[in-house]
Every structure is written in C-alpha cells, then in structure tokens.
Image 1: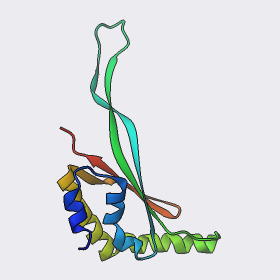
Image 2 (image 1 turned 180 degrees about the horizontal axis):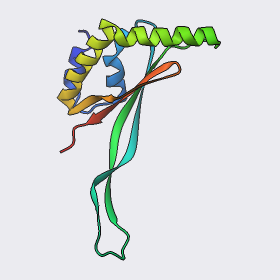
Image 3 (image 1 turned 90 degrees about the vertical axis):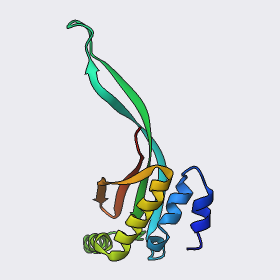
Image 4 (image 1 turned 90 degrees about the horizontal axis):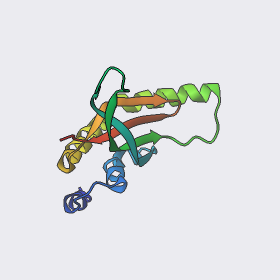
Length: 136
C-alpha cells in the first residue's frame, strides 16, 4: 500500500513502476528484471497490386516490457537444476504469484497495458512473460 500514491501519480508506465508491482515476489528472494523492448508487428494481411509484384506488407513498431523472474544461484549441477525447476513450479502455482499477477494486471489496465499470460514460459532457472499495450 505504501506505493499506491506513486502508482496513482504517474501517467507513463516505466520499468521501475512494473518492477515495484512485483515487490512481494522480490521479497521472497526472487530477482525481478523488467526490460523495455520493441519488435515489428505486421498489420493485416499482405496486399498484392498484381500477380507479378511482391506482396506489400505494413508493419508497426510494437513496444512492450519483458519481465524475467529468477533466483540467482552461485553454482549449477544436475541436482541443483532439478531444485530450481521445482522452485519455479512452486512459485507459479503459489497463491502469492497468482495474486501479484492479478493485482499487477489491474494496475496495468489503468495505464492501458496488460500481462499476456500466453507468453509465460520457463527457461532453465527463470520465468518470462511480456506486458503489452492495448491496441487501438
């Protein structure tokens, strides 16, 4: 609750604001990194002006945030890797994670953004997902 005023007073979404939304997970010794990224997104279907011309496609630059949640382990072994996988599975199924995602999504909606859970993936020792802006 101590950060609520900060969220309400800011008009533009930043990496720091998103990182603050995941403080409960950070407090559980998980490292949360938020990176702003861009990618090309195709608008509609390619158009053909004639059968002899290469199709014309329109693209737009789509800005998004990528969130990485991981634990920093100083060494790696097969047994340790299994423990990391178990820790990730426990975090994903925990009530804390589900609540943080739900609350963060509600706050992001105020900015016009949302968490795309279809992009949620686990890789080795981290959890990844993207945050996108609602398209007009």
